[in-house]
Length: 512
Image (cartoon, rainbow, N blue to C red; front, side, top):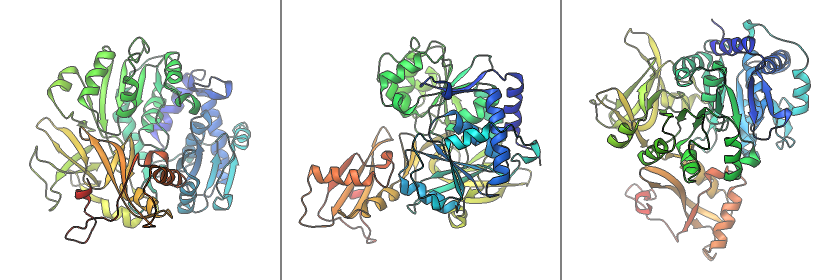
């Protein structure tokens, strides 16, 4: 099986441009940037160590946020023939522990500024940043024969599950290669190209930067955590970055657009904007076109289980004529099939149904969860009768006469919120685990068909307890100890009890 073509393209860039900066952050220190030559050399040395010392066949957990050493570790794992599983420092310790338990004693590379805050007994071994840096200077290397290839898992991304536990999406090397082939075309060729590495590595949109940009010789620029807390500090850092390519969710760029200074004067070199992860609204598109008249703007779509599979350039004409905006034309190696939600039969062109994706970038399923995998993944055949993988997305949408896909939200209780995929059941389980809460229903508030925030409808465990603002704040505070901030409801509504529907279930429509 041919070794990872992505790694081959990356290695070619390293040979041709070893002194080109591959990655730097807004912090600006020497430890916060790395060139292509060092990224290749250090990832080779770490790969040699992982090949000898890591539990074979198990993902390498890479714990941290934004740093050159995160990229070194991802590449090293792939060069050692092992998957990497990114875990962000923003995750509560219980969630990190759950991931370690699912993988069953993985080797952990802890690259955060603070020591690893989870029980080390759950890991095979925990190496802190200084240990990893020392290994990177060993001078050792591995050959291409060690690299991931074909169906070898390249990365494992843990996302929310309806069971209340994160579930790990397994993406093989061949899918990453197909993704590179398709989306590489969105990254213009040039000697001084800089891409915005905004998205957390635990979110699949980050693969645009890692796969699309690094295989094209780009420099990645990231905002470090403190800088991200201030919009003025972020804008100052962006202005001095020399950014040419923007990758983010629509929500983040909409937040930037709220400031009148976010325009071509702030980012004079910006000529490509790639958006993915949630609904891109027409009003935002028109505003973006006005602010950056010389930039090409692309709307894209794809679940974590398939990587992004569509793209379309959003022009002023498109934004003014089509509402909602299409998510685009499909990767030639992927097809979308729209099926009736009840019968599973393929529906006529233009008719709404559930989106099924079939083809080259469909995941191998969920790590260690054959039950969840069997529920949404299957094998079908292409036009030549060859077997291909298919994924039941749970998204509602349709195809128009030009082959453009439209995605109009979720069919189930899963929502996209600020670019993150959230299972409402996951939040509900978190709420009812709190001593104060007897029962909870979580709904997403929407505006223009897009989830804006979560609303928790709560029945208190103690009937005599006062449903006050202070009680609501206490519930939110306790919930943050077990769930990430983006999953904590913005609003809490108290109820003495819930109305039931004819099936004996809580009537969610009545609450909405």
